[in-house]
Structure formats: C-alpha cells, structure tokens
Image (cartoon, rainbow, N blue to C red; front, side, top):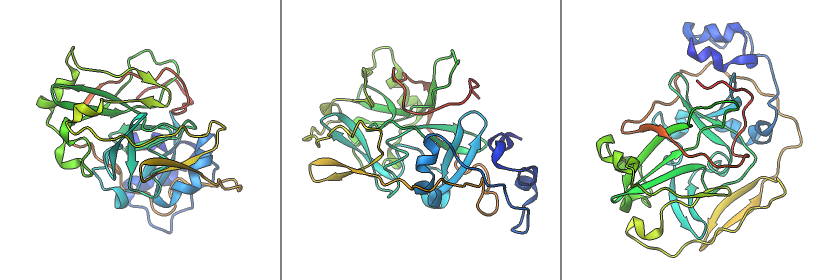
Length: 289
C-alpha cells in the first residue's frame, strides 16, 4: 500500500493497518518521535494546521489539513496571490502560517497522500519555476532535490492568461491543458535563475504594469522570518523558535483519510529548471518515486 511508505519510523504496524480498517481512538498510541533537521524548526508552528509524516524519501514532511485549505489545494495558488516586487514575483499568502511553506522548502505531490511540504532553511519569494508565452503565464512548485537522481526534475504546472496572474482568487482562472501548452513551446520565455528563486515575468507581460513593492533581502544569519506586506514594502519579522525539542506523532488522533488532496484538473506534469544552489529543501535519499 502506497501510504504505508510515508509512515516510516513514525508509525507502528497498528497505525498502518488502521488506514484500511477505520481505526478508532481506542487503538494503541503512535510512538513519539522527534523531527530532526529543518523540520524541527517548523514543527510547532505548523502542527496545528496539518499532519507531520516521516517520509521514506524526504524525511519529515508536512501536509496541510484539507479542512483548512480544501481537498483541491495547490501550493502557490490556494490561499494567496502573486505580488510584483522589485525582486520579482512573491507569493503573498493569506494564511497566518503561510510565511513558512511558501517561502522555505519545496513541495512534492504523491497521488496516494497529497501535497507534502519538505522543509528547508533558505528563504525565497516563491520556490517555483516560471514560463510565459503568447499571453499566458505558467508556474510550478519546485520539487525537492534528490541526491543521485539523473532525470530532469519534474513538477505540476498551472497556466493562466497573463492578465489573470495578479487576481486574488486564481482557482477559477486556470487554463485547460490544450491552451496551457503554449508556455512549453520552444520560443517560450524562461527566466534566469536568481538567488532565492526566480524573478518571473516582467510586469508588462501581465498587461497591467504596476509599481513594484519593495522586497528587502531577508537576514542571512540563518534565522527564520515571517514575511508580510506592509504598504509598499515587505517586512521580515524574526520568528521566535521554540527552545523545547518537538516530540511528534504521525497522527495526533485517528489516521486521516488519504489522499488529503487530489490533483486539480488542467495541470501539466512537465520538467522544471531547478535553482543551482542548495537550501530550498532537504533529502535523505537518492530514490525518486
């Protein structure tokens, strides 16, 4: 069973079996295990809003609760908007916890589980790849970087008419695949890599040039920051990390129903151009699934 791979050391066979037999609250408790690495820094901040799992390939990953984001959740589309800044496009999340998974780490989709966020320590305006052409703009979450994988990295793309990119509700404006394919043409524009992500399309491409919001660089000391828009600038506020080591369980109560999220229609599974530096996510294996 595909889901069982995501329980790894965090769950017992009792919990794995519970995914098929509708386990109740009387089941044996899941052993407590502590996340390590970047996951430990984000655990407490995100635990109330989703589920942490110890994944066999990516380590500790976080899945946002469908009760909060919906079953059709798609990172860098749901619960936010694209904001044009003097350093390119930034995803401005409307969720109180959005400062973490949309500016740190990477996203991976698994059909048996849903969208999984793989934590990382490097801040970026949005960890996505961009393409634009013939009046359309496409973007895709950058997947986790896997050590030893020779194939070209791939992710799921969304495409909108260029004039719709800045809309606060993008879900109703995603183009069908036959139109979205235009951004994969040989003559499509593709941005050069930038530290912390990519700049995305120029403002005039979206048809509504706008004064850019000022995006100052975040602190380089390794501290986590909450980023939010304040007038005509983005402010980075230090995130106060918990001094207590987190003790996580795979499922706080009953195992959730999998998959938590389903892939939206009108998405294209296509190659992405990965950033040439580390920090966007971590991996503990060379296996890609």
